Image (cartoon, rainbow over all chains, first blue to last red; front, side, top):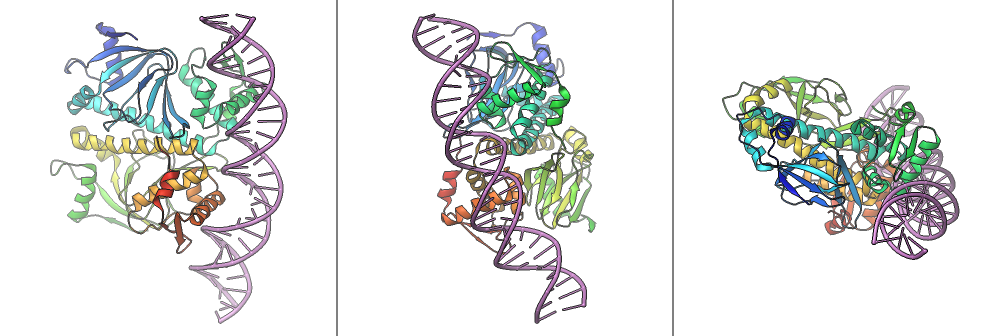
Length: 225
Length: 225
DNA sequence: CGGGGGCTTGAGGCCACTCAACGATAGTGG
DNA sequence: CCACTATCGTTGAGTGGCCTCAAGCCCCCG
């Protein structure tokens, strides 16, 4: 695992802009780049939240565990996503690298201090939190009220939108299952049914290259309001 | 349904304090009291969010619907709770009065304007959003990974904590079911099993007075991290 | 070539759902 | 006062969707 302090201006400005830091007037946020091997932990649940992270490369899963090992993944963080934000002192999820992943790190304290005087940053922190909340609200509907085919269809449409180019899923069937509240076998069966129905095609390494052939069919399964 | 503008200082100060408005320096937030009959809609999903609400008396359910009528209640708002906060222009839930309910209303615009200059208010808005997010995160774990008995046990402990005095549930079995991702029959069966196990007792109107007799038993079912 | 990890597929079982009957309570109107 | 109805909750019987367990395939890698 290697560590490097970002010194080139371009990288820093890019990230800071995502948080809406206004130029110049702010002290410099401590910003590091950090690489995580596939499967390693980024932060644990209930650990002190010292850093806020942004995905530069790779993908992250954030999850909670029950004491007997059942796992619920609350969200996947993909390139560009910011996570680790919290008002309290501790993280509420465990975060792990799904694949080899590079993150930008910021000191949480710095953000807190700056947001006291920088209204733009403060509003962007609220905006990020609201976006997480909205995702969680939609996901509650999925977990509580959709059947397995609908869950997988919704998942594929979400990934299609967020991965943008060439949909190669970074996560395993087990990860998908723990995100959707299913077992990996049920996910696999749902994907097979969608493939046989002509909605998608599966290819590549561990059948993780997925192409959407019939979007209407998936949308029909992604019932909304 | 009656409407009355709050004019007495005590009520106003009480509510504003919940949001952390600092005294004096702020323009007065338009604040009304509004009564809703049991079952009536407070605001609809995707409607413009003009107001923010605080429960003075009663209880509120906030839910999403699928097009075929399946319903997922994301949260119950009880006395003191603030809801209707959103960054976007529209509400993301439909909110209905579970029982006859009285709310305080505030103009959302006013809060937005004030929070531009009032750091304390801004931070409290973030804090409220974070609390909602935390609840949603915990609820995802429940919906995705707990069985019916665990769900009902968790629900009872939540209500016990939040209702404080004399636990008379305001909501029906159907509401509970739509909150927990179950059917009303399954909720009823789970309650019966908990009663037979000596964990709770049921009494009152529609068997909505629930007393916790054996907290350990419920806690054992409320597995965590 | 053996082993391991990830995925699929099949067989069988179980938990929650569906459908239905029934009791209790409150409100309504004759 | 009593039917009548509507609402809410409980309980039983049977079904079905998802889980469990197991086998087998593929691919990569030592």
